[in-house]
Image 1 (cartoon, one colour):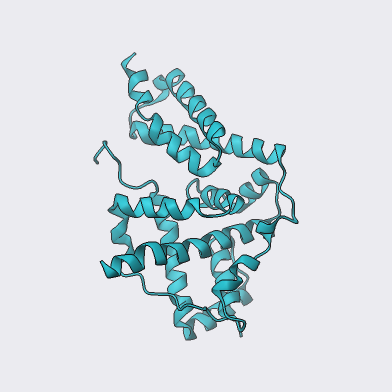
Image 2 (cartoon, chains in turn blue, orange):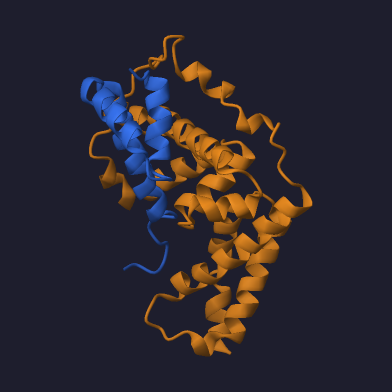
Length: 63
Length: 187
């Protein structure tokens, strides 16, 4: 069984490489049971969208 | 030469963009200067199908990568470097590996992507990241580079690259939670 600490590391790596099947499975099992890690996973996905949108709304060129 | 003036107008914006990624004022100045020169020389190649700013940022990204490569050649990262150890993240977890403070639900986070103030808070959090973690993270998420390219540019192993990206994400989520999402709940 993964700890949240180990799970968070795999969650991050999932954004940078293809996890191995075993890694994906243990992560999925952990997330199924762990509310905190599910939130963190959503937050990491959000960070990606936020940085893609960086630097955000334009000062002058509206639209 | 109105096009040159039009291009020059974007300098402050480009400088801010370069500064966050290079974290060195003179390198950022250089990268922006090179970008503006290239843009003025190549403005005929700008077909106007994208916004001028988007086109300029596209050029700037290449210049930033050149500078990052140069920086890592001149001062190669040591694998003994503190940033490759994750001890600084231990405080986020209890000794049994659970979170020490339980992560919050961020309510409709995507709504903030239209708010300038959110990106200011994000910049503060990015500025607080350790140097190499910030660079690797910006290359990955803002420039959209693959980890293999980042490893090559920074001259580090993939494992170390993943460590830098992991730290950046964990530190940013904690920083945004405290500095933005929690604060927004109160007000």
